[in-house]
Length: 427
Ligand SMILES: Cc1cc2nc3c(=O)[nH]c(=O)nc-3n(C[C@H](O)[C@H](O)[C@H](O)COP(=O)(O)OP(=O)(O)OC[C@H]3O[C@@H](n4cnc5c(N)ncnc54)[C@H](O)[C@@H]3O)c2cc1C
Image (tube, rainbow, N blue to C red; front, top):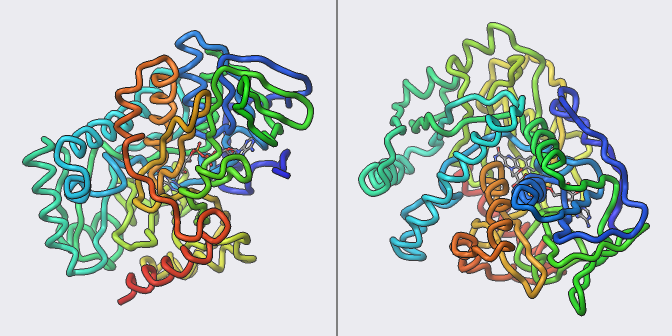
């Protein structure tokens, strides 16, 4: 049975959370136009956009709003899609690749627009650097930037030499990279809590500590919880990496994996020197390293992944060696927080958005790029339910092959494959 009622993970984000509304749990039957399962960016954004369109919405969250990946992630808002445009062009042709790029850019603008419109206090900071950890990747990077500038009119990208990236990030670990001014970073949990407030004030009924136990679309769509049944015209599955036992189709195409983050103690002036422009950074490893300064000048660093059920017993000890690879000069620094979260990936590392059958939608599998894409998926779900599915279909047409081994055996198969790719990072 899906568990319910857990507090936020003991993270830096939970310790600095602001403006949290405590929503009650559902203790009787309910009826709505749309029932949303999951209170992360996908579900909250769908709730907000549907409520703004006049739909009655019930959102149920098994724990607290923002409890999942949306309240635990690196907080980086990236551009476009998780895959390079050159890859998307090769796979789907130029037209579809351009549509995906434009929607990715709109997702980035949507996040910034929502922060402004709803006055969400979430430490937004412009600027993101992509760091190249293998010399042999530099030519590919130059080709990709050239494509973006020539064919996608990208103007805010600056290439960085080895010396420039060292000065920007306080580490000699990289051969070069590029800087994007329109991408950036935020406090992910406070962003999620801000979306929840906006959805609540727009009229969505949000229930916490309320897990969906099953979903049925035979007859009129309904969701069963411990204490009540929700009847709705449409159901949205927005549980991402935490959705278990609700929909076999989604679970066979989307794989949960765990990723880990730490924050140091506040670094004061040492932090200012480390990353003087306060940009976020992500590197070219298959198991990506990502990092940035927090508002109070801690280094927030993410790196290391596991597959299967358990988190490492000592997450600080698990992540710290990765951080020290880039920042050996921080070996004297105390680690104040370390936590893990579960994201969801697809085989092609592109989101999985589908109308599964009449009355049932799913949106998940953002493959590590959910701050923008999950927020945007919520908006597209609202459009699709209102009968405007052209933009939703740009994503729903993307192939999403099931993982080898299906729902039961996808984890061991993936673990093997990922271990091989992680090994390649070190070659
Ligand atoms: C450590 C980490 C770092 C990351 N860093 C970044 C980053 O820097 N930038 C970026 O763009 N993306 C990043 N991501 C990915 C990003 O966080 C996710 O893609 C995004 O938050 C997904 O949002 P979501 O709403 O779909 O899912 P979630 O935020 O995971 O929300 C799903 C919610 O559904 C609830 N739920 C599940 N099943 C049920 C049920 N049966 N009944 C009721 N509720 C249910 C869960 O409790 C959960 O709260 C990271 C992820 C992790 C874990």
